[in-house]
Image 1 (tube, helix red, strand yellow):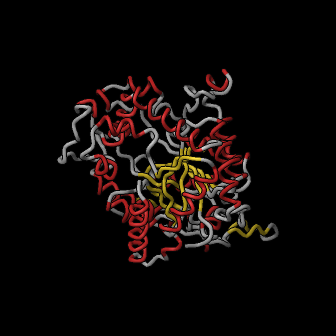
Image 2: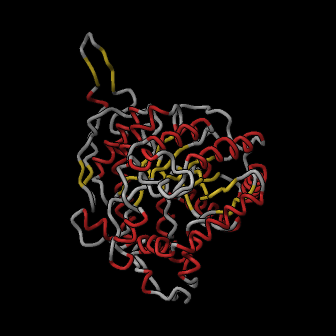
Length: 435
């Protein structure tokens, strides 16, 4: 493997309330004004200081109602709702940071390709080349109903749509040649019309003339992030993604996933080394291993007190009402979903109780201990897997957690020479390709 690996942050549950039930909730003003960007700016500044590659801002555009056919549990816990638009948050994070990549989630099921391409192009301009696109295909039918449909398309067809969508968007981003803008005041000639091209796309799902009504942005083709875990999702990621995020609970599963994606990418004629696969991780660090393990135990205990919250999350992801299953009976093998297929596949055969008590603290690889011991474990994992890095998350993080990661764990990783100490480039794409 390469000497260094990449770090990124997954803002799970998006631009919504985070610390309102934490032991470190911040001021009363913070709680009431959770929609203000202060906490997220603090996080972004820490990540920028620690030279993370990027922050993904998760999103969904609905108040869920899958669990018990009601939105009550979701609103009770502020679980999966409310959420504000991630593109708005980017506009606050960008001026507060210098180099950190910012990756809003924008769905191919909810945006027209021209509107999405224009938004991302604009964000890449105003951040001077620090934007990525977390490309998702929405799965919960509650969102479909907000966009004039009864339900979403079948799972694999959603990726057919996404293939065409990504093709249209990338062509729109490149419709202005790099030197199309001349800015000659004497002639006068702002832009050379011969270097700006309509794409004239007329496909199965979209019809778009183009070009964008703005020049090519600093990165041109903005880096695409993707998280599809199903075979069809992996095929899409191998074709389009510059960075892939995934959840694997063992080193062997991580290695198998990465090797499969690299093989698929080579089949599309891509250089596998140009794709960075980052694995979900929830580090819990403290001054001693015993203290970290106790925090881990207390979190599991807390999950056990709120099974309905965690079961509602499983329901949202799969469009399956988990309240209908016996808590202590294994999920039947015949369950199917038009939602997150890879997630459901990993849950079959397990009991809802086990899944509910695990979902808050057992996603991703197990990383619990001191900064030194956790950094050592991360180093061992990457040596076995071969690369490319980790995607940290904490669904309801607080400022204390930001400090533990950015001022405790990452400095130890830097001391070991495992992650960068300074950015080598201005643009997100270049930093992804640095190693």
